[in-house]
Length: 331
Length: 201
Image 1 (cartoon, helix red, strand yellow):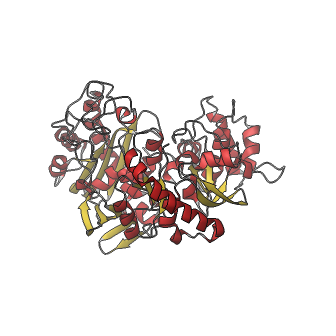
Image 2 (cartoon, one colour):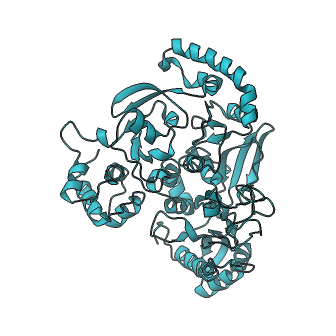
Image 3 (cartoon, chains in turn cyan, purple):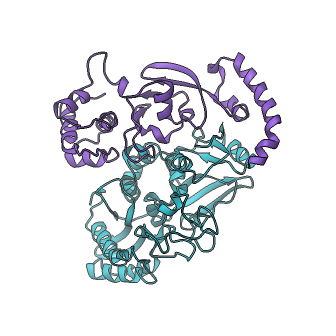
């Protein structure tokens, strides 16, 4: 690992200032992805600003909803009673991510900022427009089994690897960020971006800004499930995941929120499926129709063509499991 | 970037020398987090680190890029914690930080200022092995043994967290520890036995 300056920030303002003084620097929280990337030479910040001492660790109900600090630890949020009882979808998504050790280190903000696990991004001997703009995309014609089926571009077909983010997209969360110009809010679904012509940008955070937390509005979703399909039973990135949240009264769906992981450069909301489901009976037939709608515009790149078949099956499965009340996080 | 470094080299050197001198006369324990910021940035090469490892307090200096794993092995010569993948994928480097299990290969030593670390060397009570160590021996929870320190540290935490209530739960919450020999069934046996014995670390 190339050495760097190390600073401990004592306030959000100090952290922002320390980064402004050295734009080739970066923040470090849990470090579970950043240190990995630095060891491999994928990234080489000249200054690391340790933000772990900042007071951004809260998990608390507010009038606006559940407020979670950017530095709240994944395992602690996952097991928090407020989250388990009122936002079980988020708890399930956390439990599906990484390993117990990594969840003890990783923060909520860091989870959002993690980079793709595309092997071409990680392998510095290979072309990658995300790592080195203009060098090409190795995955497009290469091994692309793990890659996107929605919203990709000819510059990049990588996917965002997070589980937590898929649940937060479905739960209509808002991100709060702080920068030199003050604070602002970003809808969670607008936080990450599609690759387009600038795959080097994972999200819409401006230079010098820091994530301070997220807010999840209160909801009446009484049927929740996070389904994750992966190559082994635990501790693997998603081939496809589905976050399904339904508000069902009797047999009628009052509200539906759906997002997929492992399929796009950002958590992929299924807005057409959601619209279709509102007012419908919660039945397998309607779930199948919703899944069909969700797959409009999907395309495979060879090795990942299986995701085109797996996608609708996963959506139906997640909806059935949500609807049958299996909200304990176990498939 | 290299050019920048060279241009600023002389000024940085002077700045660092001053700070180094200042820090040399101050006890490392006196360098509190609040005073760190710019001073520490200027230091660049080595940063004072106060850390408790297996009940022993250390005041040492480390380069920022040294991981907790390398610090434990190379500076403290605690070779029980193993370097498997070095990328957080295998769990061989699992240690406890303030009682929580983590991958020491993905944490910088300097990020653990003021923390209490427990490694496999700190688990036994003198000559008396920890119940989990005994259970691993009894159930043959290893073959080559390379993953074993990480497995044991993880297993102790797994029970402390309350995640060892069934074989399925143990398998799920021990998934961050890979055993290439495939001793998994015996490892689960060991964890379940200690859990049933009501033992904790």
